[in-house]
Length: 143
Image 1 (tube, rainbow, N blue to C red):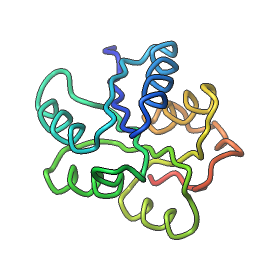
Image 2 (image 1 turned 90 degrees about the horizontal axis):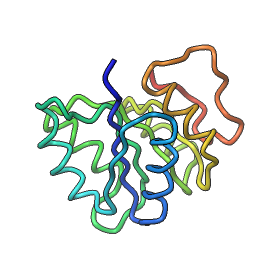
Image 3 (image 1 turned 30 degrees about the vertical axis):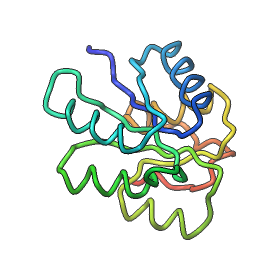
Image 4 (image 1 turned 45 degrees about the vertical axis):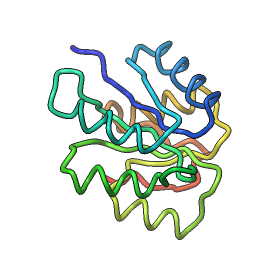
């Protein structure tokens, strides 16, 4: 089975690096960007090839384009992609908006590598029996 490609978008370079490192340790192929606009171009370009992105892990609040806008634009372009959100800003309104967009789930920052691994595996459909981490601020599966 091919390695799953996870693309991380966060305006904090340290967050992209640490999540990519944690995901590589878990056996995933991880790449990322600190710019949502650059990520949009890269993910769109890769969407038709063998190197396509299997899961987008994105922050919501970023200076050049919000995570919500990134999710919307990828959908508008017809890019088939599962999405998972890591954010420091959650709540009922955010939960509702993410659910409408079919987002697989969301975790509050900062997060431990184990939380990220569990959530990514679940978002990719790799486990159904896993409980959602107690730090999960959204509380839904989006399926």
